[in-house]
Length: 311
Image (cartoon, rainbow, N blue to C red):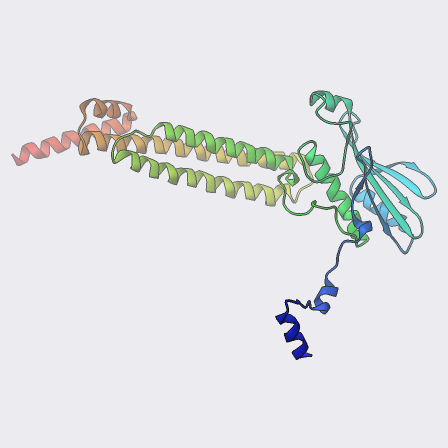
């Protein structure tokens, strides 16, 4: 057997470990998502027992309400306002077969607000841009139902996606990114193009941007994983996001105030001591805060007195 395998490998034949191959579970043709002309998602699979009790538990946990019922068919909806998004899940179930059909109905008001860029019906797809948050939530709801029957999740619906974040986390993240951009722009405007001084100011700019970015990242993670993903109350999430935003804003203002003074002191040292320039030295001294300017004047006077005594 070993001689046969070696001869086969020499001819380019590759052997596969069948024991490992059999353990790998593949998607069957029936597990694939199907979409009809209206964009409705559909998945069919075999079941062995009566499962209406499982469907009812799933609907109750994910806040779906039954709006129609027949002998082997039930229709569930999620969404209280018909002017916005309404998710429909149609379940056809008998003793041996279940077919799930789902779609998202877009209300006229929401379509008008989007200048009719949104279609009347959104497909249950986890990729794209239009209504992505609602579609991702619908995918996760259906994945939870499919998991109870040991079925594959919807294709491409797993993994990290920014649309899966809570609204409070998204708003907080957007504000932090905007604040860091403004912070960087303000500090960049203070950089003066002078040999030796520019490098110092750019290095300090990089350090300060890293500090504000690291601080914002820690605050965001504390809110996202500490509150947004654990609490179901919207007001708690918004209060947490507001508090984190206030702390982050205070940190940014503190760093801006402190770095402004440090940059002015660096310019005074450069133009007045290292490379004397009367005009720029005078401008840098006048731009100093009152306390720093008084301290500088006192230090200069003390230095002049010491020189006079030595003479």
